[in-house]
Image (cartoon, rainbow, N blue to C red):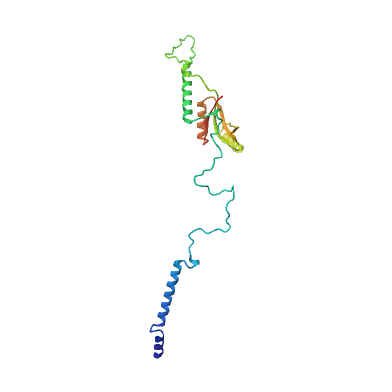
Length: 218
């Protein structure tokens, strides 16, 4: 038996068989780890990027896609579609100044109006006489209107008109052609003065309905 063990040891170069098996396993495991690390095994490769979809097709002309950077969607309506030479947009600051001036003029006119005197009483003499020039005559050659929007589609204009009706306002849709485009403008008015227009404008603003003030010329 001892002779048999010596022969096996001599055949293996003096190294036990179990040690050779262990060394072989370590060498094989190290080789597999190196191959996997290098990505030489296709099944172990990581997909860092998105996979291609074989069924995907490029969008055709007119189909929606990702909007380019810096491009904004065109609005479906425009406040500022006015008739050149016939209508003027009144900024809010200017409208407030006009309304305030009208209110002051009306107050001055009321103060200058003679009060009725009771029979037998001596009328009081005003210390300061207000002349008509101080009050200023009305020089409006047109009316004031509020424009809620101008739409290239009549159905949208009618929908806004109905929305205003729910708020208690009677609007009308005016059809005009500006350039080569037909517009359906939703409007309120006309109003006799800027003070009245500003009051309605504030009411609509409180209801979440923006408008612009316009002055019609003649």
